Structure formats: structure tokens, C-alpha cells
Image (tube, rainbow, N blue to C red; front, side, top):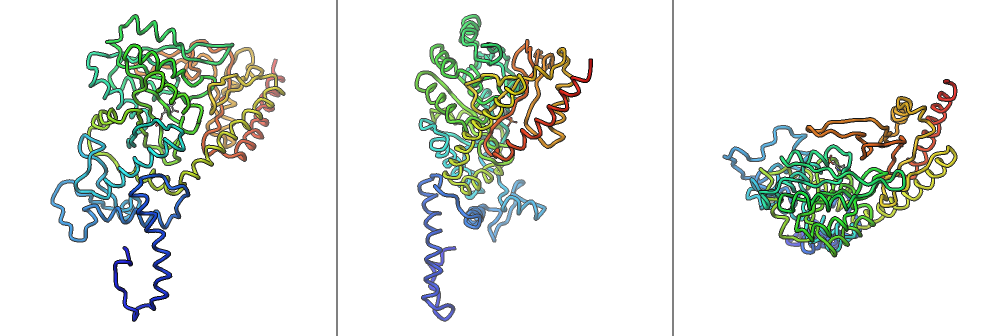
Amino acid sequence: MNFDDINIPAKLVPDNYLQLGLSAQRAKQRSFKELLEKRKLPLNGWPDEQIEELVHHLASLDSNNFPHKLGLGEREARIACRLVARRHYNFGHGIGRSGDLLEAQPKAAGSTLLARLTNALILDFMKTVGQLPSCAGCFLVPICTGMTLSLCLQSLRKQRPRARYVLWSRIDQKSCFKAITTAGLEPVIIPCQVVQGESLHTDIESFREKIEALGSESILCLYTTTSCFAPRNSDNIVEVAKLSKQWQIPHLVNNAYGLQAPDISRQLERSHRVGRIDYFVQSSDKNLLVPVGGAIVASFEENVLHNVASTYAGRASGSQALDVFMTLLSLGSSGFQSLIKQRSYNFIYLKEKLQKFAESRNEIVIDSRDNSISLAITLSTLDKAGQNSDISRLGAMLQTRGVSGARVITSGQNKTIDGYEFQGFGSHRNDLKVSYLTVAAAMGTTIEEIDKFFGVLDKCWQQLSQKRNREP
Ligand SMILES: *Cc1c(COP(=O)(O)O)cnc(C)c1O
């Protein structure tokens, strides 16, 4: 409510008192006005009360919240449980219109405004905080990263109905692969190149050979991944982008948590300059610190985004937009900038500590220099005559002591996903020789967590090596 428009009699409150209150309100009104008019991320985060006030205002524009509403349709945002209504700030209509995520929802001006404003703020985030000034457009999809990648593939399929192969640089993350099979397409797995012993790089030659062998017409797209577990490196998206441009085959990039790593953004920008990227997809939870359930599709060309938005079958949940909206306003660009700065610092800190730890135990931190988020330390001295069981115990021991996210990778783990067999699953390669442990310095990790982790790792390591030494 705007008191400025109301003539409040001095009988109710003395005018000078009122003016004090009103001028405080005006600053807030100005920030609402600026947000809606400029659609840019505020520099500094807003207080919770201010965010809630705006959200309540927006919700009041939806038909289910009209005082005079008479709903005679089958879908009228009827929410049975008050707790659920409160959890969603009385938003219930979702976003988009059946079959198009970006269309306005006639029953819900507030939800529509919220969704579009959120997309505009995410775009500003991508350009400034994410350091992707050439990003031309993006939108939030209320489904996970894997399904969103699948949605992109399905929309490409409409453009290239005769193409059925997806050339995919191997990464052992199930959802990356399932994105292809879920879209009903045929994956062509391009194994990584093993360089200097252990680190993994994109095999560009193999991409080129496959394109020549299959013919560009039959290939739906080239599919790469940036952020990933070490010792796999971020794919060489620049060279793949060049192939994509040269052969006129679309290029899809899985940038799951790449927005927090400025060097990945630089590679994306460069790929766009010298080659072609059609879509790049990032997880909303990993980059924006909201609950799991959303992803952002972005492109260097705005008009192709609509193809993806209109591939979505149905009206979509608005929850993810609300979470992202509130979070962006709460942190502001300065909040996110400092998280990103801290993360870069933490990565160096983690890397140095891990190198020291490795040195003192005759292990190495694998040199995967095109990975600035995740690190891998070898477990060769713990690996007794190639028996993996002890090493696998390390993972469980760490977990029992509260460490989550650290992964122990051993050889010989075969896995079949949707009929495709992967040897050495987890290691991104068929012939892993030395077991290793991966840890990541992702956005939100704290120095204290890193320090405590080394305390725990040291204890577990001692236990395991003592046990190893006792046994014959
Ligand atoms: C997290 C992640 C995914 C999957 O994310 P979902 O949202 O669970 O689908 C895919 N690829 C990579 C590289 C990831 O890190």
C-alpha cells in the first residue's frame, strides 16, 4: 500500500510524525520501482521484510487472491492446506501457459510478473556476476539440470528431425547421459584423452572423426560438459565450438556449476566468439544456493530460447522462480560476488593443503589444470595389491564422520545405463589404474569445513594405513 496517495487526517496522526514515517517508506518504494523498471539485480541485498512485502504485493495480483474471486474452472489455484499456501506465499497458478514456459498466465498477473522479473534478474546475474557479458537471454526451468538438458535436446530434435546421434564427451554423471536417452536419442560416446598419466581432456580428433564418419546431417548435436569431478577437466568447449560452427551442428553445453568459476565463463565467451554454442545449461541450486529442482537455460542468441520454452509440455511450477527471486534480492550482486571471490580463494587454499597432505604421504594431487573447482588425490599407498575394498572403506569412514561430497573412485566399477555399458564408471575412463579421492571447493564451502575435513581425513588415513601395515 502506498500511503502517499491517501490523505491522512492530522486527527489520526500528527503530520510531522507521519512525514517521518512516509519518507522511510519512500526509500523502499523507490527500490521497488527501480527493480521493476530497470530489472537489474540490486547491488546490495534487501532485508527479508522488504522482500516479503514485494512478494505479497505480487501474489495479490493473482486471481486466487482476489477478494471477490469466484472460481468455476478446474484449475483455480485452490490450496487445501494453509501451511502449503503459506509456504508458497499464496502463489498457486504456476507459470507459463500449457506448452510454453515463457507465455503470460492470464489468471495470474503476479506470477507472470514474478517469473519474468526473475528471468531478467538471472540474465543480469549471468552477465555481471557470472561474467558472461555476451549472454543474450536465459530462463529458469522448474526441472533439474538433466531433464533441462533433455528438454534442449528435444527442442533441437524438432529443428533437425532426421538427426539422431548425440556426440558426447564422456563424463561419469548419470544424469548427463540420461538426458540423451530420455530424449529418445542415440548417444555416441567420445572417450576422454588421458594426458600425462591421469588427467582427462576432450578428444577433439575423435569428435572430428565421428563427424566425418557419421555425416553432419545425422548428428543432432555435440554435447560437452564444463564443471565436473577431477581429474576430468572442463571440456575443450572452444575447439568443440569451432567444429560445431564448421559443420553446422548445434552445440549443447552442460555448465552445471560453472557460473561460479570465472575461467569457465571465459571459455564460454571465447567459444561464442570463435565458434558456436546453442545452449548452455546450469543448475539453479549449485550456482544460486536454492533447494534442488531448477535449471537455467541460456544462450548467446535470444531468439532460439523460445524453441526450448515451447517444448515444455504443460504449465510449470512457480516455486523455483520464487526461491530464486527471493535469493537474488536477498544477496544482491555484492553478496554473490563475495561468495564467488571466497570460492576462488577456497579452491587455492584446498589445493595447497591437499598438495601438502599428498606429499607427506607419497601421493599426488593429479594435475587437472582445466578444472578449477574439483581436485583429486591419488590413493596408491592405501591400495594394497590393488584390492579396492579397503579404499572403498575410506569413503564410508569419511561419511560416518560427517564428510559429504568427497568421493572415492576405484577401478573396475562397471555400470550399465539404459543399455549402454560403462567400464570403470565414476572415473570417466575404461582403464583407471590408481584409485583416487575427489573433493571440491564449491560455492558456499567454508574455510572451517576445509580445515575440519583435513583433520578427519588424517585420522581415517592413519587408521587405514596402520591396518594395511599390520596385515601380511
Ligand atoms: C549436478 C550435475 C548434473 C545433474 O544435476 P540434476 O539437477 O540433478 O539433473 C549434471 N551434470 C553435472 C556435471 C552436474 O554436476
